[in-house]
Structure formats: C-alpha cells, structure tokens
Image 1 (cartoon, helix red, strand yellow):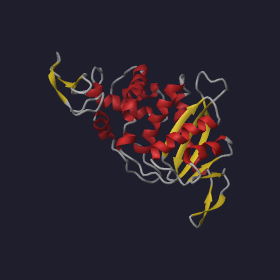
Image 2 (cartoon, rainbow, N blue to C red):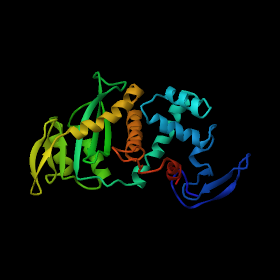
Image 3 (cartoon, rainbow, N blue to C red):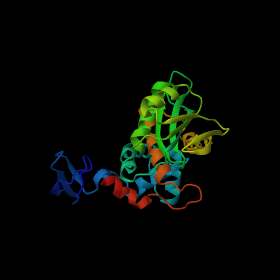
Image 4 (tube, one colour):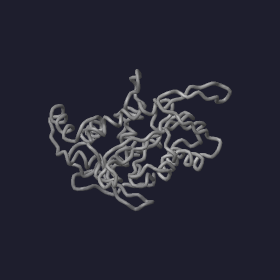
Length: 274
C-alpha cells in the first residue's frame, strides 16, 4: 500500500488498531498509517466526505451542502465540518493535475477579475486566470496587487503547468503583462492585446481573428462559485480553494455539449490515496 504522506511503496504491515483495522509503517518516512489512508479518524464515511466536496464545488455554500446531505443522505454534519473537509482534502485533490495530464493548446488567454479577500488594502483583491483556447483553466493566482510582479507569478505557474512556452499570449491592456510575458516566456512567445473586439494577426502564415472573449467566458464559472462562497478570509486559503475549483472545472465538470467526464467521481478516491 502506498504511503499517504510520501507516496512511497516501501510500506509494511504494522499490526492492527483497537477496532481491527490494519495498520502500516512506511520504511521511507517512518510514519504509521492505516488502510483507510487519509480518511482515517473521521466520524463520517468516505462517501459522505466526497459528496460534500463535490457539492461544495457547485455554486452552493457550506450550509447548502448540509441541506442537500440531510435531504438525500439522511445525515446532517456541521457546516464547519464541511469547510474543514474541503481544506484538508483540497491539497490531495489537486494531485489530479499531475496524474491526469491535460493536453493544453499553445494559445493562452489571461485575464483578472475583482474578488473579496479580507486583509486587502484596496476594496478588492485580484483573481488571475490563465486558460487555453479549449477553455481549460491552466493556472490561477490571487493577489492584493494588480501589477507586473503578480503577472509574472501567473505566467510562471502557467509555464510550469504547460511544460512548454505558448506561441501566443492574449491579454487585456494591463501594462504589466508585456514585461512579464517577455521575462517568463522570452521573445518567441507573441503577446497580443485584445478585448471584446477581435484583432487580426498573421500567425504561421495564416490570418487569425483573436479576442479575449474566451477568457471572459471562462471567468463566468468561478464567478458563480465565488458568489456562493462570499469572499475569502485569508489569502493562502483563497489560493488553495481556487486550485480546488480548478480541478473540479477541468476534470469533474462536463464542458459544453460533452457529457463525459475526464475523471469519474468514483475513481477520485483511489487516485488521491495513491
């Protein structure tokens, strides 16, 4: 069994607990764990926890999750428990991005929008979202400032997630994008400023009409979810929860007219425990 802490395969059986659950010990990190893995010491079963995570990723509050669990599962955990489950298992769910790679396109749209995060000097914080031409979210970043330094951060995250330099970066007229694009991606990546109206460019010998409407459309989905969340209290939690939503958006939500999922919800538990 894989170690839930370091993912090592060098684990051996190490007795049983008082309830007869098999325990293991990792020979790499020397930690002990049971066969329940990261779901050990929880009052509610795995199915209830995973259903809570799925419901929270919808445009619904933690109290709304409790109402749905009470109606369909005949169980009523605390709304605080729902939030604690999301914080605990969000980092494990993010592993899907490394285990189920998406083939992103070489055209990247980037845009930023206002959100509420406690502690910001300005009335709003800023959510940066980079997506490809197939409406897949590549990377997200939340900051208190809207400047070139934070533009470099979202571009650096984009480069790490892509594994290559995009051919075209499409953004609005924020001045920080120009310097950040050349700093992170180099001169071979073309930076195009476009808003709602399409801009004609010649790329690889073909005339292309490019606008940033696709980024505005992608922003609609987190906007609905953020409306139910009603802002964040901490910047680090805000970035963690946006990564959590990104996983749901890319892997667990059908896009457009497609009804299939990139990862079936029943397999998520197996993936994050490996």
